[in-house]
Image (cartoon, rainbow, N blue to C red; front, side, top):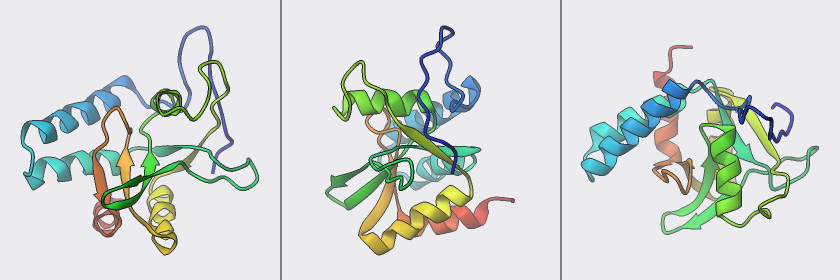
Length: 155
């Protein structure tokens, strides 16, 4: 796990952000899912892009010594909130009222594929899935499907 971080540098960049084209590809795949609701192939392609990220970013609801990722209650059960970038995680923390507009947002990241394994371990605590970039995207994946996606990685 990397250190918790917040960033407000003059350039507006966040070192927990992947290259802009990586985020654009995730957004493009999410748009394809929304254009074809109920079709499985676009969803698979979206989640293949999510598991191909170098790291997953989490909003820390615990302490630096005992990080606890932000999760939310959904109709399908508890969803672990995974973010594709530090910037999106910070925006989500503010949009969801987790911190004041000017407060520090504590984040941590875990390299993928270790992040997938870590997320799947939350199944023992009642988590049923993960959601990506909630509320900006909000697509979700059941934990059992993460195992298959994990297996499809080439590393």
